[in-house]
Image (tube, rainbow, N blue to C red; front, side, top):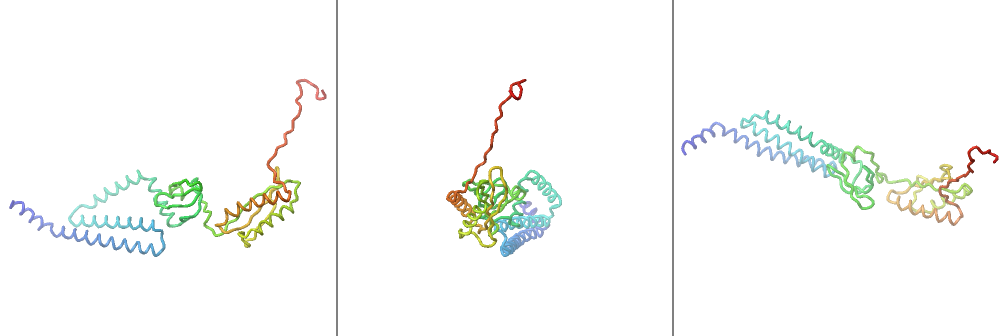
Length: 277
């Protein structure tokens, strides 16, 4: 027993100060890491950075700082930290290669939260999904589609694919194409359309709405109706105006033709027969 205590005494004599120093480094370092992380998060919040990014960035910073503190404490007791750092680097490389797609999603998520191409509650179309943005995480974006189905889109696809944000602007144009028959009065049809547009209270005066002839189609003369509305009124105005146009044209005797084809039948000629019969 005395020999054991003697060995402990000798070890404490030789390495006691290093151990005390390592413990001090750990305690002070962990406290400092927490303080720095809290300051970092407060700075991000004052800059109105998304809370998801604040939490993620704070956790990453805290992990890195504590890792550095542990390495410094190990170095204080004489541990060869160069080999440890090399092992950690190799492990990080292996993990990075195996989780390449996940890391790409993570990086894309950070970029989305920084540049904010869309926000919660906005209507977007991306990655084959069209609906309201319900949740933005570091890895995926969740979109509630118009039929109630929840679409989970990886952030790499969200960030790299074509993105259409339907509610980013305050105003939006309603584009309607209305076909009338070639025998109908174009001026009369345009006057009816302009009257319906002017009667709709939700349509904005500026930019001014327009009604024009777009093209001479195969079966109809196609007129364009292009009023501007507040974004929140877009769906309602589009549907209501379409219904009013149909009812008004019916009342005024203006035809809305559907595509037709004329099929011409020619009598076949018997083989060798004279064209005159």
